[in-house]
Image 1 (cartoon, rainbow, N blue to C red):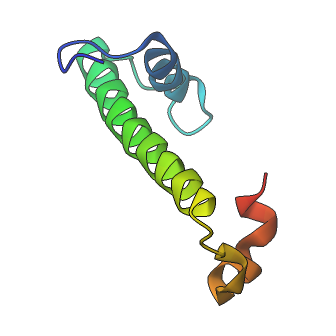
Image 2: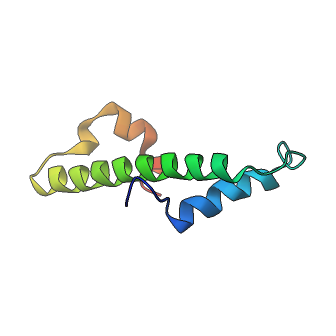
Amino acid sequence: MSNLQASTESLETAAQCWCDKETGHIEMSVPLATAFAKRLDEKQEKINELIDFAIWMTGCGYEFTKHEYFNEQRDKLLK
């Protein structure tokens, strides 16, 4: 993903923000939606890196289920 262009999925998500009850009365700003979409792409890239790392750690025999956080958040984490 280039720093100059946001993904179509993120642009659609950003544009949908203007359809929310709280923001439906505000005129859409394309530059703002594009900037927001770029930030979404950056966050998604980081999430994907963390997912890959977790998969790698699991493959190395790391046992996530031993951690209290995992057990407390299990249902959310395994969706």
